[in-house]
Amino acid sequence: MTDQHRVPAESISPRAPELSPFDWVVRTEVYRHLVTTTHAPSPSAIAASLDRALEEVEASLQRLATQHQLVLAPGGYDIWMAHPFSAIPTDFPVDTHTGRYWANCAWDTLGIAAVLAVDTRTMTRCAETGEPIAFGITDGRLVHDGALVHFAVPARAFYDNVAFT
Amino acid sequence: MDAWCHRHDLARGAIVGLEQVWSLAKHWYTGRADASWRGRTPDQAEAVFRAAGLEGPFWTF
Image (cartoon, rainbow over all chains, first blue to last red):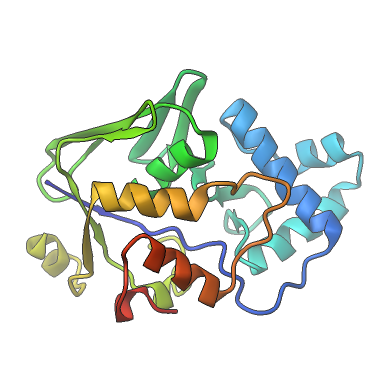
């Protein structure tokens, strides 16, 4: 079985960090909200939580996206990806005792287990054959049936097309 | 896998077993949601790949 999938394309700053302390606070709030609710916060929810103007938060989200700390949905400021989390349903659900998260790829399904440090279970399908693939983490150990992961995009091209990557 | 690559007009990339992907995920993502997270430089990211046993041109920025 194989899992043709996407590679997380964030985190590596394209140049020296240019983010302000406030930007990092915004990023932390995004992850806090995602971890605790399983959903990404809207820009207005971030602004309300931090007691800051919406325009400040939107500008911060844009800087975070430019620095590959987040991925925004096209044409706005809504969060699309905060790796390893996806803000929208994907082919990679991650079920935990606190609810269902969505990952961007097979790597990210296990990334969510690493971030949360909890047991997880994912049911997906082989992109080539449609064969069901189940894997997850139980008591810190990987449980799987021998699936392979195909990393289609080399690291140097992670940012060429983030949606595909 | 080769059929999938042909259908999508892509070269075959890197094939990695899930155990190694789990190792990579732990190295790559542990602490990612922490307030102290500050991202990585390309050199730091390549070090993470190497820690998971992933080396070579495919894993170079």
